[in-house]
Length: 359
View 1 (cartoon, one colour):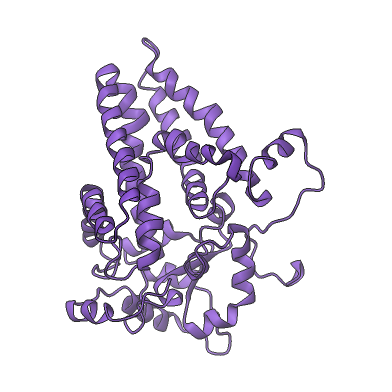
View 2 (tube, one colour; view 1 turned 60 degrees about the vertical axis):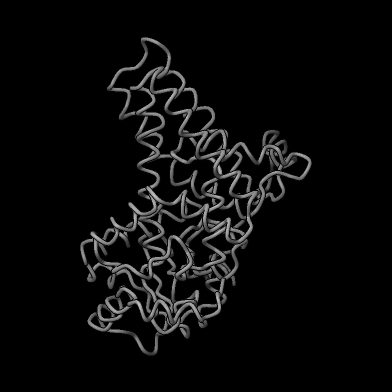
């Protein structure tokens, strides 16, 4: 599809005409030249966040007025990009085989400064979420919750926050994924022990650098997952077109490596992030035929926010009419949204267990 015909403005891969010396050095280390932005993001976090964090632990340096500066930089400037870099490099290794040790840098070195305990994301997302595809065995499944209810969202979030390590360990053990359990527990327990020790060293800096980002990151990750899997078809909950959504032409996609294309991602988990917009455009008739829900100009977190306030008018305003010949009215859209956010009853959950998992 030519640039003139494109209906999305989200980023696709365009090779540089010239690569400077640092570009060439980074390209010599990584598997895919399309992932060059990840190297510069790693560099920025390493240069700006880690020294700032270390400085806060230096005796006599910490001041409470520095906390909002640090947290704003960390949580509102780098966090979204970091999580989606972690996401993409979990699916597709960033570094070449001979440099594979450096793949640990993103989750183990950078992760704790952005509220991510090492390895838990990988075990949850790669080892559990994608194989289960938001079906009942998915520990982060939204099926059993009313997806426009803040009370249900908090139940969902608190279950994840306090129970995920235990539930995920049980899940992995039942499926014989013992190596993944070990890595997750070493990362999770190691993170907690490190934070406990640092609280005795400098509790103020530890609170700002590690504790607050940890709480914030786990909250926004579950809000994002809720938005991604809020609109489910009760007749086909295993259909990726109808248990995920897509968000196009939004600032979030430009910042966070096309994360809005969640249907495309579930259809092919290792699809490169630069390929999502064209996959959507090339298969838009299939999206329309399958009844996919697509929004324009908003992201998953805005979808979550509108749902928490039951603001279906806003969602309808941003809905993309894929079937131009049979557009839905505002009332029809609101009825569709309410039906798709309705919780699954016990008998529906049991019936869905018999359906094949479509990932």
